[in-house]
Length: 181
Image (cartoon, rainbow, N blue to C red; front, side):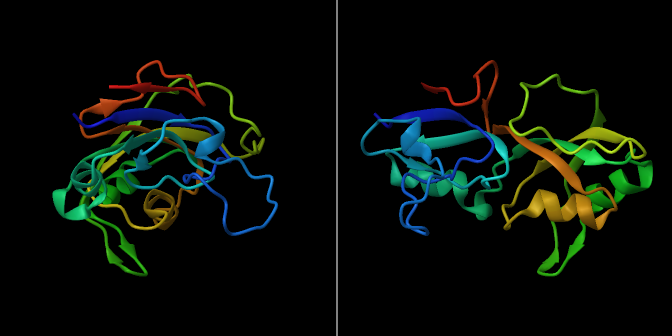
């Protein structure tokens, strides 16, 4: 039986078990939260992003989750700068031109503030610029793709939380917590 672990990665945590880039680095890694031998992340989640990471000891499952050819949906809740227009949503739904090509069409909708846990450090708040929340569902996984997509339509990302991958979701999993499924 494969082991599958769902982990709610906090902001500022490297999505790997060791920090080989900087000797003596104080940056937290997955090993600060998960002490389960033989499991590895299926895909990545940037250090400045939060939310669902899936870890497994099954190489085939790991490849299926992370390989874009399987088009597994990844659900993101994104706090963006500004009030998202219908035109911006339409652009996201059609695919956005990035430096590395046009993205696949995304499912994009405005959502109410999802009332998430507080982020440490908090996002920057500008008194003169409103912010809003959208939900994006993408089926590819380019480097920093969601952030680049929202910026391309005029709404830089302030906070990015992955809520789901395929059939797995965060549900009530607290930041820094994990559970085996």
